[in-house]
Amino acid sequence: MDIKYILRFLSIVLMVEGLMILSCLIAALHFADGTWQAITESGLFTFAIGLFGMVRYSGARTMRDRRLAYLLVVLMWVVLALFGTLPFLATGTLTNFADALFESMSGITSTGATVFASVERLPASILLWRSITQWFGGFGIVLLVLAVVPSMGINKYSLYTAEASGADNTGKQTASTAATVRQTLGVYILLTTVFVVLLHKSGMHVWDAVNITFTNISSGGFSIYDNSLERLTHTQQYIVAAAMLLSGVNFALLYNVLTFHWDRIRHKLEQLRFYLCIYVVTVIFVAVALTTEMGFRVSDAIRCSIVQTISVLTTTGSLVADTSGWWVPVTYVFVILSLCGGMAGSTTGGLKAMRVIILIRHVRKILRDRLHPRSVNPVRLNRKPVSEHLLTNVMVIFMVYVSVIFAGVMLLMLCDINATESIGAAIACITGYGPGLGISGGFGCYAHFTPAAKAICSLLMLLGRLECLTVLILFIPAFWKR
Image (cartoon, rainbow, N blue to C red):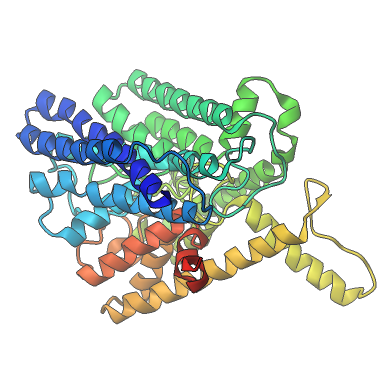
């Protein structure tokens, strides 16, 4: 019965994905790019498979074994990525399955890494499909909760207080899961609509505004231009930067701000201050570096620093310039910054601000304990002691994160990728940032990676999106025992 429930849920997911593919017919027919038949076949095939499964397993409506919720979540992302390859393969824009899987996984996980050397040559329907996958994937945490929470019998739980691995349990809300999902989805759609309108009012075509908003509000980074955000006007770049900045804020916090529930945001303010503080400090450093080391005009240095820094911090991956030629220390600061990410409960990747705060304060506690062994120095967050359970959880996630990056680098080097690119690709894929180092950095792409290297990167994207533990738990032998 549990397996049938999983198949039924995956079938519903496939029906949704089929409708998403069919929505690309709007672009195919409007721009007459010659892909309408391939898009129709891909969408109908995906929808039909899902419809068959839903009818076949319609009687399975409960899941008894809570462990299988982890399997369901992982399978959901894998199935979405696998069937997401169909538009690329059917239209002939990609002929290699490894390339198609890489591009599809990058979209669904809102990573932004690409195998396309030039996206401006792609059919309009494929450009829209890439944007839709990122917009859909950016809000995938809601799908994860919808999949796990009902099957585990949990009625009340904050949508973003745990994420995939129990990241933030510092303040639970009283609203039901369904209500929280509706609220957060409402904020997501509202922000998307607002920024599409703002970009259109700034002189951008509606088509461009929709695609750019979809990929930046979701912290994805796919672009419809070969040079990403560089060709946008300065005003438009600032608008996109604002979209990325808000995408890195906890969406439950944004909802409470919009509805004037100030008493509900106190437990999030410390994370918000850290998020904004690290952003401001990095902007100042990068602006000074661009002015003194690379000869940028002050106004251009400030603009590029504001836009590019928020793109890195939120792991969006949009580029205001070809950063591969920037001063090397700035490049490596960006790599470290992408590991941090935005707030828990946002669309961003990385470790998240809350975990970084706890890690820093835990190190400070250890140093204080060495100076004063008899003193009591608990790790605090929002003026409250952090529980040992949460502290252990954060430490384990950090250790696993670093270990997976190290393993990814080693495997990529075995695929004849040089050390610099291996490090950049592993970090870019697991954090969801996208652009790596070397040829795959800046306006470059991952087309030169071997099929094996692309498969490894695809796995890293999945691990990063589900924060490693959700996937790795499936490889524990005890998971499969009764």
